[in-house]
Amino acid sequence: MKVKSSLERMETKKMKRKALAEIQNNTDRSARGFFEPEQEKEDPKSIKPYTKDILLHYTKEESKYMPSPDYMSSQEEIKWAMRTVLIDWIIDVHYKLNLLPETLYLSVNLIDRFLTRRVVSIGKLQLVGVAGLLISSKFEEVASPSVETFVVLTDRSFTENEILRAEKYMLHCLDYKISYPSPLNWLRQCSQDEEVEKLATVILDSTLPEEAFLVYTPSIIGSSAAYIARDILYGNSDDFNEFHRSTPHDLGDLSSCICEVKKYLEKPILHSSIFKKHSTSLTKHLSIRRGK
Image (tube, rainbow, N blue to C red):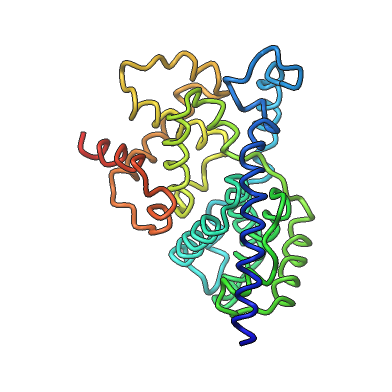
């Protein structure tokens, strides 16, 4: 009865948090207005005129918040395949809790940066993932999931005290530097189209579990996802001039990442969380691309 009561309380909290999250999702775009290309120019709250300067600043700062692309060489027990399973689980939990897109990308960044600095055992790897998602939720969300929620989602593998201690330790190891330039910033700015943005988000999400893309900066991977989405949807008929005005990189800078992502999309996507999250008609575009 006690377990049932706990689950019922968690479900009630989840419903309340979902309602608040939906409100936040509807207002978040306006709060991050400079990434919305269709926002009215006469809107006094718009900071669109400063978009290029803001993204330029992010481009200069992004390398400071990147993990080492070969950090697994310093790990003694865990392997890249284990990271893939962890990130796949993080995407699934993020989807179930109806969290903001920024929360997902920040949590993955925190996890990779932490693993760059600290050696972690197999038994503690999921705890690292939970701590990263908890921190990013508190940082990005209006109503963050409770620690009890994460205890239940891990099948009670960890106690509330263990999760809170892991959260504190991760923050200490990262010198409390949480925020980072998300690839979503460049994806949204370069998309210039709602359908392109949706497909680009599917593409970007699908690259998260793959360690091969850790070598690319957020601006490059975000811009590349937007470019590929435009190419899939519109092909040669698309006018890429607007895209080139939006990205800080020329096509030469993006070519390596674009080729890598395209090769990756030609293979079967094995991560179940991607299909659960994006089980819509958008995935058909990826199938069409493979058939070309």
